[in-house]
Length: 314
Ligand code: ASP
Image (cartoon, rainbow, N blue to C red; front, side):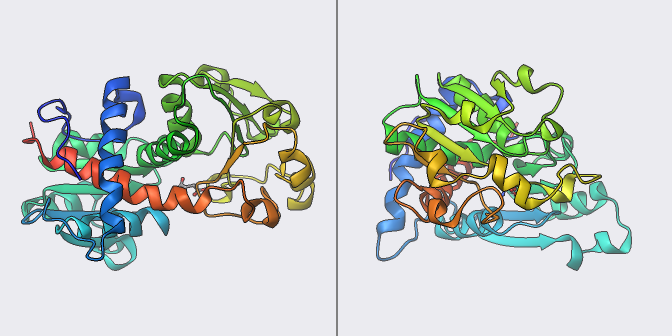
């Protein structure tokens, strides 16, 4: 682990990939690379955040992201506090801003926030002195997911420049796709998104990706296939006839993987719906890097925490 890039990182918060320059993305990835080694030590602990308090505010369900932030914080010796809506005063009617101000009065150094409404982390970041990390805001952005995906791709492929990446599934409701298209395009990838018309937002092309409605056209010759979950929790009405029909048209099977490059890697942010967007033998097969994504999530979150806490809040 090194303290790379002293003075180069100036940002108080990590709210979205849209805000970041190519250089800032590279700094996070290079810093994450240096933190990966901590996970291989017999004692997985560094003193980098000793004396710092981190508060994890998850207003929406999470398994990977919340546990990843908590483990990252603990491995960096921070005092980490978890806060979820069901056990908090939010269930007694307290407003989000009042809850956050209350927590803020205890002077945490970092707030990690997930919320089902877009831009909530952005609004809070303007009002509070703590550093804010967006752990997913509605269908808007999920910056640490895109960063851990990028770290995984770089490890497997050496670089992102010039790669063909296909992202398939529920494009409309996915924050993962938005952050990933922004990041992959910033680092020079050629990105195609594919999904049913009923799950394709009107502004899909303005994301900066090629748009396809047939899965095969998207994955042909791809270096990377990223599958997305159908986000039923964000769909006001049913957009699909049935899971079986969806799998017939957009499920990733071995036959479809054969259309991509021989050394294609298969990614998924989780949670997986086996037999809906991805066949089990593909999810568990030799081209899948799904568990490596989870491992890299720790290094990326350690890197972000390190970079944000290493500079005074403005
Ligand atoms: N875990 C990712 C997210 O929070 C993807 C998903 O839920 O399908 O957006």
